[in-house]
Length: 461
Image (cartoon, rainbow, N blue to C red; front, side):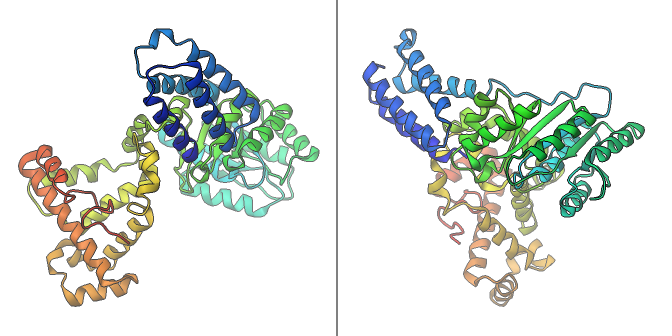
């Protein structure tokens, strides 16, 4: 997300670095670049105008910061204004009511609403320790009801059955009554989507809203529709008292126009963003962290939170203990590392949150990608338990069998074996002399590079 905008802004800052101070001329040049970048990112025109005016006013008034480098001053101003446009701070769900708290989900067809219902239930379970009841009021698509039932099972939420011959308002009322009797914390109500906004759809969802009396009414919108997402959200906001927005498919949106337009056009906060198909790929929306990502500063706080929630700490501690005792790092350990990385959204998701990485993403795509990681796991899966535990026994005939088993070449197996050997050496250095030796090893020519990270001996798939 924001790839094009990040690159444009990085280029603008680079130009300012050669300037002695901020002047009206170089500010005008920089603002012209920023305006073009925002428009290319499909940010709504009124938002672009307001943003540029605010940045210009502040940049020309930065007398107290004239001693700093112009690039730094300009970045700080742009960052502050980006945060302001997207909503200052994260706004959490307000579930402080007598249970069950009802969350109503609205949106157009294809926005990912039903999947988001399940993702929200998982997030509430994992982070808030709240139980959820999921119910579908979509009587037009039997598949939607079945889909939600399946997803509820995956996230450990309870599902309230419904059918196409019922009234949506009756379904919602019955689900809430059931949740009240069973002491369930939250009821998440999925509603029918349409291909476009129409009066029948709005009348139906208004009736459901009146029956359910939700504490939160969230509008789910596909971020890839750009500024159209903001306009659609505004139309819903006029019909329903929305309390927040959920942006979906942000991993496929390289522009980011929706994130930068919605708050200012609707006045409603973005509360969550979905960034992948996995059931745990929903995260709270923090304007300050997103602004940092846009400006190439990364999002270390979100990365730390993700590590705390998604890394299997028992497995990590077990590996650390194994390494400290000087035991070999085998293919079972390597596979675990790949799986932990995939749980955190893969290499692309990690790189997006690391400082300075957005601009490097394209350069590294041929060296680091999740397809390579899946192939490496496939190679390991083709090994016998003995081969995984004792890599040294993998010779010619075994290599050929492993390659055939995963549909790859013997050269690919050789590359993975080389990676495992490099990791084993690095782990030995860590056990003998700690992190300092490992860092020296990494500087010495790529031997300590993590698997799949390219460099000498990289996978090169």
